[in-house]
Amino acid sequence: QVQLVESGGGLVQAGGSLRLSCAASGRTFSNYAMGWFRQAPGKEREFVATIWPGGSSTVYADSVKGRFTISRDHAENTVYLQMNSLKPDDTAIYYCAASRYTGRSRYIAPSDYNYWGQGTQVTVSS
Image 1 (cartoon, rainbow, N blue to C red):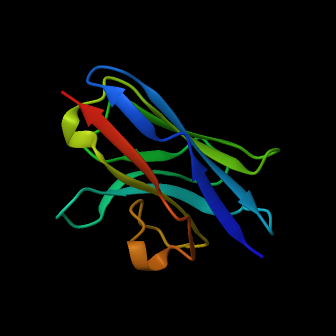
Image 2: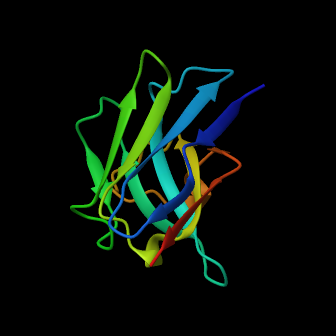
C-alpha cells in the first residue's frame, strides 16, 4: 500500500515552533515533488510549500515565507515542514502530498498531486 502519514502536529503557543513529518511508504518518492497544504476551519484548502526532486528548489506561500521551511530526506523517504514563529492564523489541518508532475510551472495545482496523507492538526493558541 502507498501511504503518506503526517505526524508532529499538536497544540502550541503563539511564537512557538513545530516540526511536521510526512513518512512515505509503499514506494520511493525521490522523483516526486512533495508539498504541504493546510485547511483551516470554514476555509478552503491552501497551498503552503513545495519541494522539488533534488531538494534545491522550493516554493512557499507568501503567508509563510521566512517562517516555514520544507525539506526532505531521500534516504528515509520523508519530507518535513519546520514551522517557526507560529501565529493563531496558522491553525489548520496540515496535509502532505506527492506529485509526479513534470511541467514547467513552479506551482503544482492540487489536482496534480497523486497521493495525499490523512492530515495532522496544528492548533496555535493566542
